[in-house]
Image (cartoon, one colour):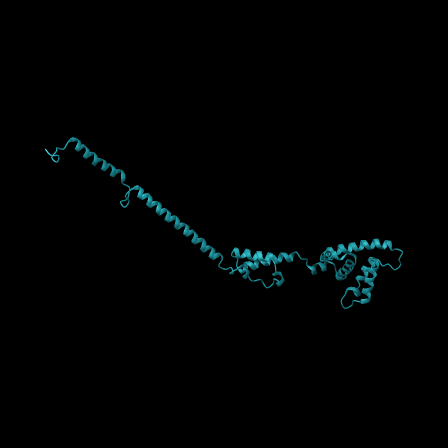
Length: 247
């Protein structure tokens, strides 16, 4: 009997059935019921899901970037092309612009934050008001000194120029910008006059501070149109005698 005609044994049958059973089991394990037909395995499904997730994530990033870009374009749409192209308001003096580091900072700040021309000018207006507020209101301060304000201011000015050294001139000028400053200087004048008049009591020609102040209230000293040069000179010479200046 040849090998081709050898009878089928029980072992052969069992081996065949075992292979078929293993193939069926392998097919059952490798392809679950929930796996879509277009995917060969759960691993293929997982890989596809990961790829989709990456694409979606990339899309969200691009979308976010596009939204941010659009918002920035809207925020900066009304600012000029550069920080140096903001227009100065007409009420700002020209000398305020030259070499002004604070103004340069404000221009850069406005540009970086997308401020338009109106917002730039509004900030300068507040700035100027703050600066102006720090300056005394000269007419109002003068009014506080009464009708003979100009005469009082002139008397203090003449006295301070003779009494204080030149290096104190700026400080005295700032003090004289307010009514309180003028009155403080007058108090100093009065105090020094009293002390000096005590020393000069034996001098018949000495004129008191009070008498000079009374003379200064006369229209011949302070009122425009009635001012008498000789009378004014008499007052000035009186101050010169009191404070030891004979010029």
